[in-house]
Amino acid sequence: MHDHDEMPIVAKSYLRWYLDSTGVPTLLVLFGAMLLALVLIVTLFRRGRGPAVPTAIVFIMPLPLVVGLVCFLAGTIHYLHQMGLAAGEQVSSESLSYALTSAMQATSCFCPVLILSLVLLMVLGFRNQTKS
Image (cartoon, rainbow, N blue to C red; front, side, top):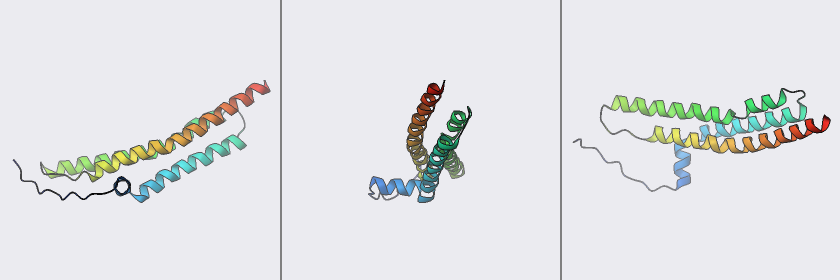
């Protein structure tokens, strides 16, 4: 058996842990990706012409998920790298919690983009149906 130095457990609120795990820069990047996707979708809806607009909206929709996937992969790779270097010693799970919370936040940022996109795509469909 290995003698592990036990880390003292400090009581934190869930919000404090979430902000510490994800980090303010990652939250700002995820919210920025969400706002960018929302602005591009609304701009395409208002100014876009032709049959390529729905396709462009569908390609812009998963932008927050792509950013979250990159954060998840970076955190997971860093955690696995730490485990490889530790050679059986205890490894801090901060990198893994970063990966998981950033993926969860990315899906939370994706929901408003999805709802707005679906509503605007339905409006575009009804608009094109009435023109025929």
